[in-house]
Image (cartoon, rainbow, N blue to C red; front, side, top):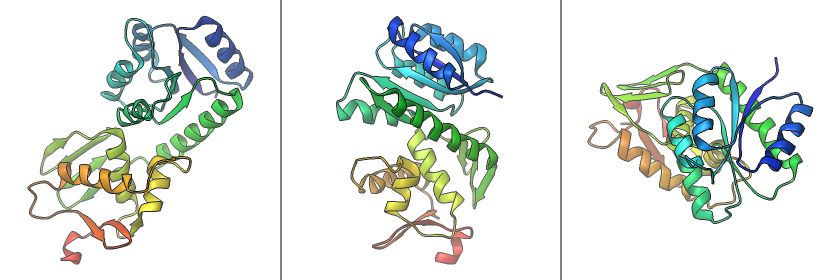
Length: 233
């Protein structure tokens, strides 16, 4: 069965070109020329979609607002596509839930490669969908929901992926480089200390005011969540 991609772009010549190239690669393609149409397409077809390619600058609703709305419902992969190349914009896009970011102009081969990587990764994640529980913390990958002490915890996409990675490797020390590769991707060109920054964000949400913190720091190495938190005490 062909993967279905929602392509959101207000430049008609570009959307025509990309649609032709994607269909040549055997993808099914839905299109939207503005942010409101993109939101309506998502609402109508979200169960069929494998990926969204979403331009930032759109009429009616900008791409960031469209992505925020989608992220309230699911973790469908999104590639942000924009002429912006300021690093702050890239960070904003990724922090608000984008899985990847491509800057115009780009070669079609690069976009196709990014699509293949994301769909392959999503397929593996779907096979691993389950519920994790450590002490009074639960993470349900199907609902994309995190709770601790019966309280719902709101996480950004990056914080969620970081926590999920630690839970998938519980009892194993994850180095900063390993977390960087798994959560940010091997082509991320930022500094490794971004891992420490996001660990701090995550701790403030899941370990704040808790008698039993779950995320351990292994000095000089990385981070760890134990399947039995009492073992490390």
